[in-house]
Image 1 (cartoon, rainbow, N blue to C red):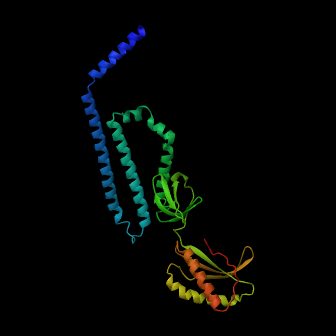
Image 2 (cartoon, rainbow, N blue to C red; image 1 turned 180 degrees about the vertical axis):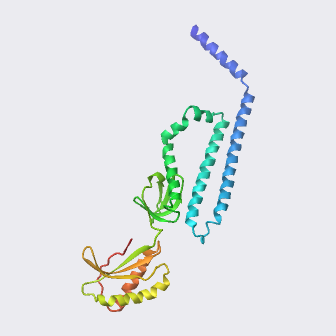
Image 3 (cartoon, rainbow, N blue to C red; image 1 turned 120 degrees about the vertical axis):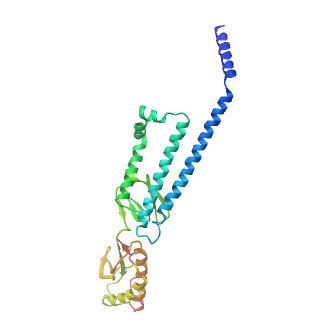
Length: 289
């Protein structure tokens, strides 16, 4: 009987609670909160769009192709965009939680949520942020630079607050956390040296090659302004494993060395053969540094 009585009492209490519950007020509360959340979302979405539009307009005149520091300004522009995006996202989340009645400020100050977040993963974010700022101010790399970071080689396509994006020559997009960037080999800051190796045999009349090479240089140099100065004829060099080459060095602008190697090697080989000089059938691949 006690169980039956308890069940009946509970059932009666629940019915009284349901019947006395102000469903109209509850509906108004849900609708009010929903409208508030919708308004905040639209508001911050609009602020995000307008803010990014203003930032793009502000940086636009500095990102012209004829600007001297276009890559540097493009990097600063991307970092500014990312910082603005994360700031808007933080305040949107804060406003949403506050609207839902969550005492965010009290929780952060009293319960130590901020310290807990740092312990659970925010330390990595802070490390990425600090490293990203260091990369920017130390000018280690810019958007458009050809770099090697660890085992990854390619062109920098984006520098963000958390990651740096590098596109490899085969099109692979690599996302590198900034905290993992320790050594950067930037191949876009200084002039590059391209070495052209012309394969020869011990019987090749090497004394005739300088004149042929100089004639080729005289024809090609006006067509390739990226070559800096005159090519340097090194002469006969032995490469492993015991291969004889006639070596010519080119100093050129960064990013043009591989094309120039192929162009000048092709022209040298053609001119040498036209002069009646036979060359070995094997060839040593050109290299650059």
